[in-house]
Image (cartoon, rainbow, N blue to C red; front, side, top):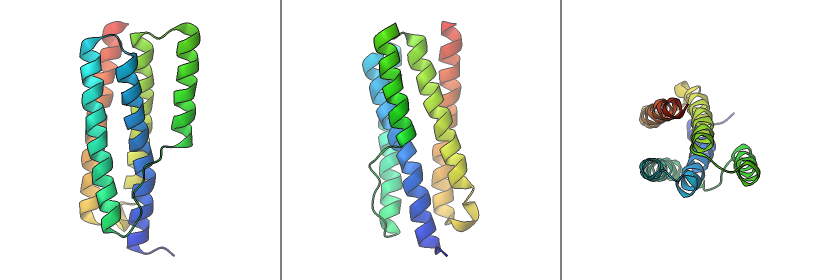
Length: 151
């Protein structure tokens, strides 16, 4: 049976893989978009994601774990698929927004999965995860609005 420190490290390492997916996704989106306002937004989200990852990694270290720099296999496959799709069909703003929205929805699931361990996590860790989840939810709403304005 895992102790509280091990559980905290494992939950945060898994969550940080999704945050690292978010970093890669917004870095890619900022390169693909032709809309200057969208590019600025994606760069802001890239910086936010880096801050989230740093915050998670600091917490992992405080609990004696190894920082997490990798991404998920699912995220790698999705980014690869989007590259192929964009090469064949060409990229457009709607496709970039949709892929970001999909990634952000996956992030929401990852935050919810982490919060499923709420009872096993220290309160400060729960608060950090909830704060990041809320920021991700705000991003989901903004991406939905961007998508609707293009439709």
